[in-house]
Amino acid sequence: MPAVFLDRDGTLNMETGYLHERADRRRLPGAPQAPAVFLDRDGTLNMETGYLHERADWRWLPGAPQALARLYDRGYRLVVVSNQSGLARGLYGKEAVDALHRWVNEDLTGFGAVIEAFYCCPHHPEFSGECSCRKPKPGLLLRAADELGLDCRESWMIGDKISDIQAGAAAGCRSVLVRTGYGRQAEAEAPDALPVVDDLSAAAEYIIRTDGAEAP
Ligand SMILES: [Mg+2]
Ligand SMILES: [Zn+2]
Image (cartoon, rainbow, N blue to C red; front, side):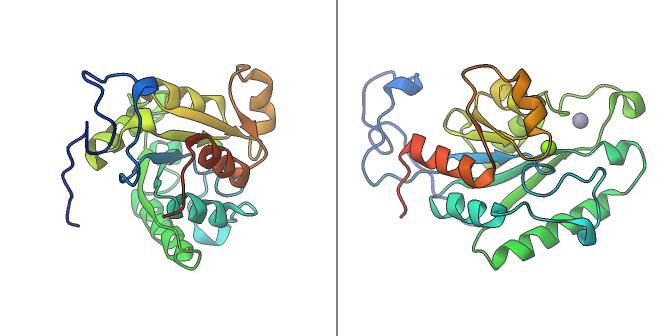
């Protein structure tokens, strides 16, 4: 894929001098926007079934593919970040997970959305020791940001567990909790300031409204 190298101040945002805080950033009209939305997988995109690794068991949550398409249309780069302790437990192999994710993207083509990458933590402390990528740690998001050139400060994390929200916050993202999956239980422990919405469609709506993202 070809790259476009962009100067920042005066090109993407108003030149203010020594800009280093989000509150001072003003996008120039028409400047390209490429924030990311990091997405938890099970319970956020698809029904939570436990150790899902076969496409026959994949069920999109209602409206989820359309919500991804809305975000994608607005220029958000979509990146899944998923704990896959089933790998550490030996319940399935990485090939199965990769094949499932390829199929998810094929299915999304019909809706006009593309998930740019899937980052998975294959660890579990009891089976493979501690790691720096199992959510609530931010390792998956930070690696994605580094490898894909994403600005976490401009990005969002959507998930159905507090550990998703903590990973997002630790990476410097803003977060939204959805009530699907384990979200209703998680809501009880959610900090007051955290936006909590019914599902991925409502999360997309919230993000687009908050950012004032316009359709291209
Ligand atoms: Mg989940
Ligand atoms: Zn890990």
